[in-house]
Every structure is written in structure tokens, then in C-alpha cells.
Amino acid sequence: MRVKAVIFDLWETLIDWDQELARVMQQRMAELVGGDFQDRWSAYRNRYNEPIRTALANTGVPRTLIEDVCAVRAEYVRASLVPREGAIETLRTLRERGYLVGLITVCTEEVETQWASSEFVGLFDAEVFSSSVGMSKPDPRIYQHCCELLGVEPYEAVFVGDGANDELAGARRVGMEAILIHRAGEDPLWPEVLDWDGPRVTSIPGVLDVVR
Image 1 (cartoon, rainbow, N blue to C red):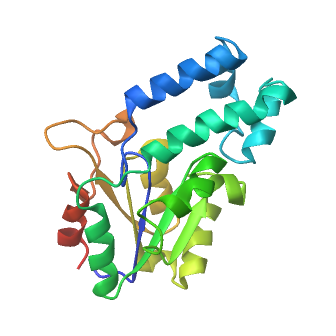
Image 2 (spheres, one colour; image 1 turned 30 degrees about the horizontal axis):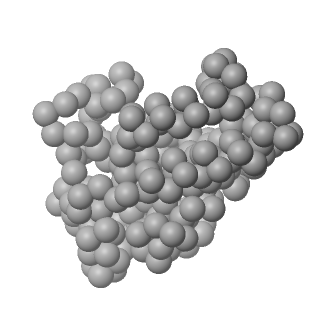
């Protein structure tokens, strides 16, 4: 596979979705704004495509509690932005080999605001956060936007992700190759990629063996 750019997903790709941390966050938010908040939040389609305070207001969080909720969520994101084993080294190696490196993540605003304190700072040539650009995977425009920032055509890029949000098929639809990542000894997390017919890896360093 010869490409100019490698674009990564974030959650369950470069970092883990920590179930225990998420449970604690959800419990603290329920204590603040009610036990049904998570249901309201999950049902709100634009939660990843607009500023967090707007999204919280639109899901019924009282104005007086928004900053408290934001603080809880920021704490969770800050604790979650821990690179998976080999992720930092792989990103550096790709750039040393002459590849451009990008990020496309479906996320709330806290990821972008906490990004500067993470180990990922300075390792990407382009970073696209859905909450900032107002669109999410698999919208073709989000892939095209990242490619434009990198200065490459979609067919010159490969996307790496766990398959959430139809992201792998979405990448293919704009002309990109796509690599599925899932844990060794486990099936992929998402039913739609259980029979994935493209390349797959079980660790981030494995990308270096696929992208040549």
C-alpha cells in the first residue's frame, strides 16, 4: 500500500474508551442534572457537532449547572487522553518515514480543549474535531476536509479506525483505503465490521506493517 497520508480515529484506536471512567462520569452527571440525562444525551443527534454548552442546554441542562457539568466532562476527557501502547512511537515513525499524519475524531468540545495537555500535541499535521467543524463521520465532507488540510487527495490517504460511526465504509466511499483496528483475540466492537474485507491490525504499531 503506497499512500502519502495516514489518518487516525481517536477513541478505541489511539486511546481507550475506559468503561469505568465513563461510568463514574455518568454517575456524577446524573447526580447533578438527573438520572435520565444519559438517555437524553444519547438521543441528541447533534451532541458531537456543536459547542458543548449549546449541546448541554439543548438536552435540558439548566444554565446554572452547565459549568459544573462541563468540569466533570473535562476531567473525564483529560483522564482518557492516554495513548495506547505504541501509539506515540508509531505516529512519530510515520512522520519520520515521510507520511503526513491526520486525525478525525467524533467528539465533544472537551477533547479539543484538553488536547494541549495531552501527549499527542505536535504529532499530527492536521486535526479535525467534529465539535469544531460541525459534522461527523461518515459525512464525506469530514474526510475531504482533513485531506484538504493535509494537501492530499483522498485516494492518497488511508484511514485507521475501530469501525464506529460507519467510519471505515465512509472512508472508502470518498476513495480512501481503510484499516480496521481491534484488540488481539477479540472480535471487532461493531457488528458492521465483523466481516471486514480490508486490512486489519490488532495494535497501532501494526499499522507500520500495512502502510508501506
